[in-house]
Image 1 (cartoon, rainbow, N blue to C red):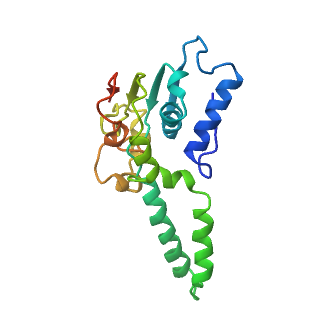
Image 2 (image 1 turned 180 degrees about the vertical axis):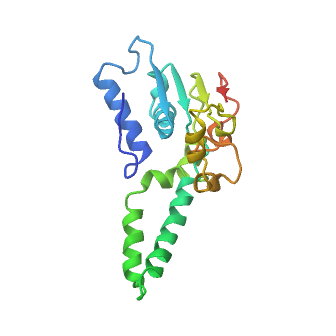
Amino acid sequence: SFDYESLNTSIETHARSLKQKLAEVGLEHNHGKVLHIVAHSMGGLVARWFIEREGGNAIANHLIMLGTPNGGSPWPTVQAWGTAALALLLNSLTTVAWPVKVLGSLVAAIETIDTTLDQIQPGSEFLKSLGASPDPQIPYTILAGNTSIAVDSNRLKPLMEKLMSDAVALPFFGQDNDIAATVYSIKQVPEGRSPQPQIHE
């Protein structure tokens, strides 16, 4: 497995680290083995950048993405809402308003550790750049979970009710989602690729 820090380091940096780690175990260009990469959520973006921008298409044979926010995730927007809510909450809990400078410092502290959140914001420069990548010409399989079609069993029902509370449902504005990204976003890989990505919802 390839583990990485998911807030303060860019996705491109993680993709280069992935390439280096694979090279360290003998998986470089023309390694003569079959390599399938299975990636979850943001890991799929790391893998895509590796394959599409770092020569990984000569190393990997197949990419399987589970719940990857290829078109972005609403949670960076929620972070912005949360920052504003924090300022309002702090000021409403005290008799004296917090100085703008102090609130600014709190916001700045949050901003210093959200590099990857900024990158997965819909319409980000990172996602535009990734979307403009050349066709890697290796198979992609995309698995998109959808909470609206979850199995209704006695064991799962309490969990799904907790997960789909108003606080989680709000950012998606009623769109089918897997809690981290919309199904539409997960399926957003450029068209006209050969082979065409296989999408399973």
